[in-house]
Image (cartoon, rainbow, N blue to C red; front, side, top):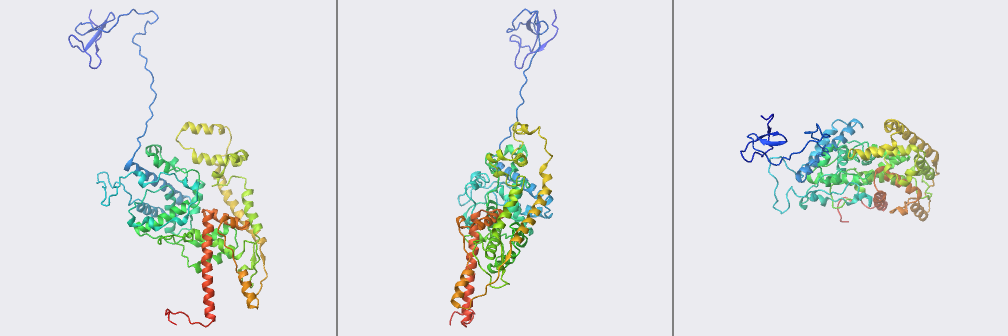
Length: 559
């Protein structure tokens, strides 16, 4: 009987006798095309229950394989990290221009600063270009390990244990003969570059403004890693992941230190000098936020002329003092001026005449009460301070503050890394009815509430002011000298323990307003007071010499 259908052997198999590649089945036995019987095919009798199932194939479903991205390393990893930072920087610039109304040329300034920042980094110039080899001085080439070019410590980790000291910056770190390369930028450098662009454009923005925008989540910084595309994030090496992770806030003074380092490095590497601060609007804002009388502004201007301050970032010298930082100097002058005009230690210092600016007295107890009422009366959680919430606070929170905290937590820390985790966190809150996007609904009311708070604080301040009757100078020379010293005496506080209650409140508010550590403000104010003491001593000596009839020095030392 002729076969009904021929079948092909599997790959590589054939008949052992004739080498035929096709076979057919007859009576449950396989034969090759030429009729030779094939071994390995067992005969069996068909079962009635299995009738019609011969030839049925069941395949096991395979689980879909997850695509694992290839982790980049070396030069490719560093270049991808720089591209990620550039993406974050573009988002920040876009927000500043669109939301904050920064000028359109702000983007061009940022492009120029970023190009200079990455110019001298040891990266490939092109794919086909030659790679940099070992230099004559024995240093490794541009393809050294990333550990030598980049610190993998995450942003904000060092700030948990100690504050950043703004007086530690030195130009020796960036000296051309020190054979040290410019390290890879960190995430905080993106905010520092935006601030430097504000200096170039003469915009009255401070580092505290950028810290506040980052803390509230308005500008892309704390959750920058969640905004990076998933495929890009999966290819980043582990050390760059840690560099892009921020714990929950920017430590005080961290951004100031980054700005100072960039200013020095731009000067050393490219001989670039940044213009001074547009300090007049900043002083006015500091005085308004601290609810101080307008006479403080006049005192700040006078001390500025005495110190001959230009409010530029220092770029020379082996050691940079705390007061050399322009923003630290500004807030220190505000505090020192308030301290000179309205004593904080409770000692009576009567003015000499009605023209004396010390003829008004501030009731610092009422001022402290007015400043504390703002934080007590608010029913919602203050934006930018969500990271201060502790587990004990969560147990005692009302619904409004708890909703604010959960909104901030979802916005900052729930990314697209693991969808199951996101669903597990959101599940207990899905049945609760919440207004859509409540943060945007509260924004206008927060601005109006802040203006109302400033108005109420100044009303309380004006009601506490009282005029002091002047006390003229005594005619007795000995008593005049003693009383003059007591009247012009101003205590110098060098530690937090030395501060009286009113001074401690003022210093803490001022340090928070400038986003610097309290110790930095105390040290800066003490340095300003020392400079004023030296100036007063020199002026008194000049007046005594002038009264004795001595000739004015004209440059000749011989008498």
